[in-house]
Image 1 (tube, helix red, strand yellow):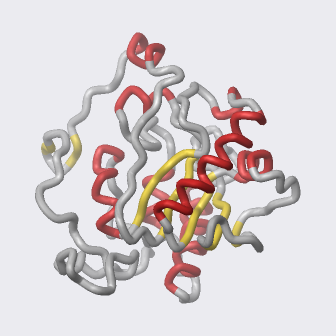
Image 2 (cartoon, rainbow, N blue to C red; image 1 turned 30 degrees about the vertical axis):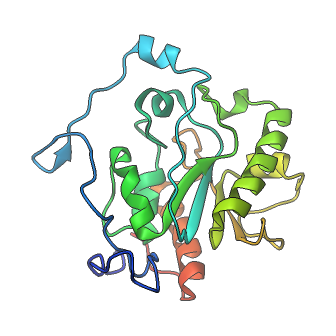
Length: 230
């Protein structure tokens, strides 16, 4: 079973504690998004031409003040570049793992990404340019991306940084023996954690084990034992 969640705290931006995954608050003002029907998000799938045109494109980060956890993807896929939503490709398991791990009270659709700062969460990428597969990136791109990420973390000052993809982390930060979980060194003052890549191509992890990995980070953020993950 997933751990119980309280409803988002209605406190406004003057709340001195700020948002946390324990005590999320709803973003101030309306959040634009696609129409909804029967409780599901109605979206149009990009076609082949749109996906092809999205190669080498970029998408904006999801950032806000007082971030507790900044999640770092490897680079946007073509679905993400075509839609503007992080981890947007059908079959990517980031959003289910985020919920299973206890960071959100329900599973969000990628189109709802702009609600994340209200929960103290953000998303960026190590490499900005989109590609069909992460293995199309060169080691030089990952090394340059790690430097850019370090500067970004220094600027936005999240409490935690979670890189989703151990191979990209090893190459970008020259840590060839790095493993999943907490890392011994901080990143620009933030505590650093490495998570599995949630891509559907990563057959080493199931939705359940991915959720458990996210739950371990969630427990570390909250200073609590890991929650049970269904």
